[in-house]
Image 1 (cartoon, one colour):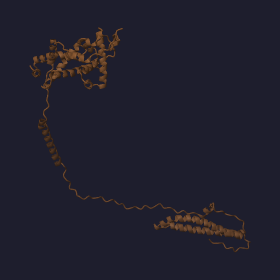
Image 2 (spheres, each protein chain N blue to C red; image 1 turned 180 degrees about the horizontal axis):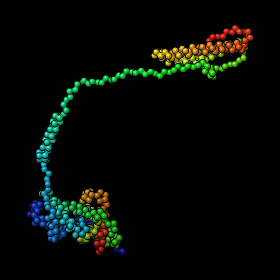
Image 3 (cartoon, one colour; image 1 turned 180 degrees about the vertical axis):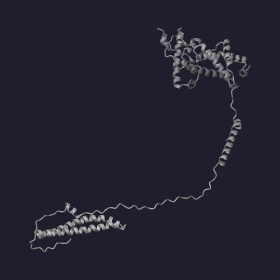
Image 4 (spheres, each protein chain N blue to C red; image 1 turned 90 degrees about the horizontal axis):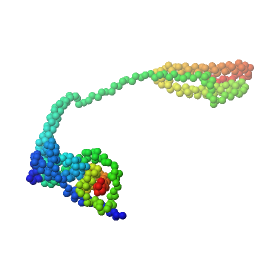
Amino acid sequence: MSKNELVQACIKNDKTARHQLIEQHYGYLMGMCRRYTKNNQQAETFFNLAFIEVFKHLPEYHDNANLDEWIKKIFLHSLIFQLKSNRTEYYITTTTRVEDKKPHTDLFHQSDDHDPNNLLIEDYLNALQKLPASFRAVYNLHIIEEFSLKETSEMLEISEESAKNSIERARNEFLKNVNLKMQGY
Amino acid sequence: MADNKTYRIDESALRKKFADYRVSFNPACLQLLESEISQVKTHAHLEMPKTKNLVKFIAIPLVLLALGCLAFFSYNYINNLPSASTTKDTVNIARPIIQPKIETPKPEVKPKVVVADTITKYPKKDTVITEVEVPKIKNIKTLSTQKNSSFKKDTLVSRTIIKTQPDSVKKRNKTDTTSLSKNRDTSSKKKKKKRKNSLDATEDIRQSAPNSADDDVVVPNN
């Protein structure tokens, strides 16, 4: 079954076609959800909600468009919306710093044994999930998804200056988390 | 002491890692998702009708209806207008009511009658009355002169009286003869008084100096 046929079957409320569509895109989209959320449980709920949005908007899908990109776009918007809708998590970031709780780590002076680039993807994912929601969103959009600063600020509805500022802070926080992960914390 | 090297996270490598990151499919999530999707009905997207159809079926009938309503109401309005009145073209202008002037008699101002005695009692400050002991005949003369001077004073007063006379004159024109007769009476009285005064003066002189040689002194009658 081609992608267009699959979409048409999903529009007609075909259960098997729907299962097939979910199965095809589950791996990548769930990975994306995990990057934007604080844990796997939240990622699953966000995934379900985002996929419901996909099914809602399936009739708008045109044959010429790339289905994977189209679904990814809907997912991205849905994830940001859900992140922002959780106001207490997104806007009220904890002011307690990592170094207050954990031993001091020098971000730029490390030995060869602690190269931050030699970690597993799961460790990076954990480090990312530990970031505050706003930093996580900014880091994902600008650094991993490679959106420009302007696009990032527009998607998050913040000014470019504040986006820039939060990107820098998110970078530092992420590096700290990675270093802590390397030290076994 | 171990040399410390600077490290930064290679973001491009990290990007690649995340891009290749896939989560193994979990069939349990399908059931959950399926239950949620079944609750949400997929509904076809409502497309706006084309502009041609909009114009054909909505805009033109609406415009026609509006025009019909306008024509109907305007026709009724013109029919229901009040008929032209049969009034004349000319307009009667009301004449101003002219009331005859009622001449109210002006309050009569009585002419001021100044008695010469009263004036003599209060001579003007400027006039200096010189009392010089002179022989009797001379005294008589001086008296006459004094009288003349008094007359002069009278003339001053008379001027004032004359000033008041125009009122009386005007009244004469208005057939008010009473004031005129009064004035005449007052003037004649004055003359009589003056004569009396002069006669009294001569009598005094005669009484005071009966043996004087100059008895035949002529007293001016003024």
